[in-house]
Length: 527
Ligand code: AMP
Image 1 (cartoon, rainbow, N blue to C red):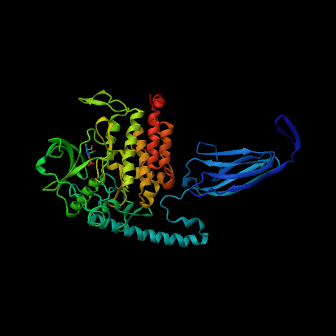
Image 2 (cartoon, rainbow, N blue to C red; image 1 turned 90 degrees about the vertical axis):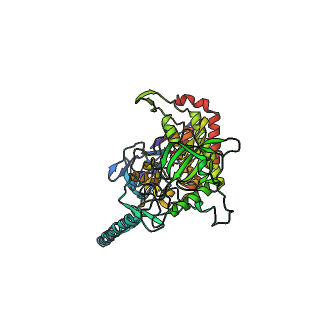
Image 3 (cartoon, rainbow, N blue to C red; image 1 turned 180 degrees about the horizontal axis):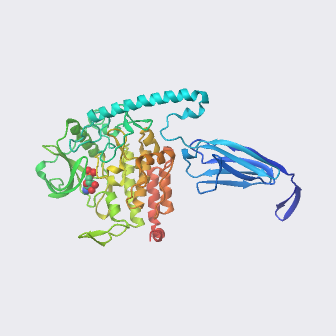
């Protein structure tokens, strides 16, 4: 065969012999990290390549497509996958053909494990072992089912304690009297028959045992560590005058109140008070721990805690009043669909938030998080519902473990009682209950997404078990319609699978500041 090779303006004619195709390389993707099957094929003329999966030819889509570079007598490249999951695992056959012949080769692509599959050895069984294996598996499964039912009944009978003695089933870690973890939430409306507690330090989702670890921050202060005891300010009951109800969490009702003698400069001031009725002894202890923790956390972007009122019932915590309530509600009220209703009739919109306001909100939460990280405090439940909005778009992180039931669908019940905000959690927190400053950064990425969708629920189109599958398989939320690429890049930086590869919260804040300075450039995007 004669081939023309051109270099600058000089062209040489060279003889390239005709060669049948050979597949010189077909590389298994590296588990978890690769999204590509690498190949090199020789042959002249250049072979035509076709890929097969489960005996069907792969048609090229956004999700699977070949990328290749063509050289003089070989072709190399990748069969590239977008966000592959365990559904993509399997044999991939490459067929290379030219008029001289056909070459095929097959490789096993293992991208991700099936979530919660603890029996990955099945593929390596010899066929004759299978019947025996299946019998044992069926026997064990039957035994496990009986045990599950017994445990489930026991937990239902003995396991349901009310954290604050307020209203029915409130989250506690299985086998423990009560818990102070911020991840334990009221379990209204979520029933998960395939989950149950697995001892005092674990829960089971499907086949996976997930350890339950108390938030250690709750034990850092007070009597059982080397730090000096925290003195929580006590406020007299007669100094608190309730005005109206603001909301309700599992902790109890939240009221707007006037508080006297709180500030040396003001006779009285507006505050938000959280009430806890008829507490059990354990709930009192939680309350005390919570108060100590809140006393120690002081920053301009953390809601101000003034003190407690414990003379009589209910127990009360006194916070600064944040006029616009929680950030999630605020975002929804300032989104494109929000209307002010007068006598049930839509009257006008509240005014949509613009990009610079969104960035301002996000940078304030980042500031609060930088402070928390400096205190080595891992929040574990960062979400817009746990931030508060005050005058002049002042935003603060405002909830440190007091559960809510108005947002109960944001939580996933994994044990009889444990509720997890899975939609805000990274894979390592879902799978191993590993909570770190880096897992808080992941949640910050989700907060950014919430801000740019005006308060939508992350993965709103999916059920909880599907969300778990998506996150553990490496899928991430899509770019919101109104979100500039630069902001989505920050989200993606928060959602790196490896915690060490995630952006650092200080860098995130710098990036947000830079974007805020350049905001006019982006205004038309939001237009
Ligand atoms: P929580 O018990 O923290 O879940 O609060 C329940 C609701 O009370 C929230 O959704 C807020 O709307 C409101 N709330 C809580 N704390 C404050 C506060 N400091 N200022 C104003 N509203 C608050």
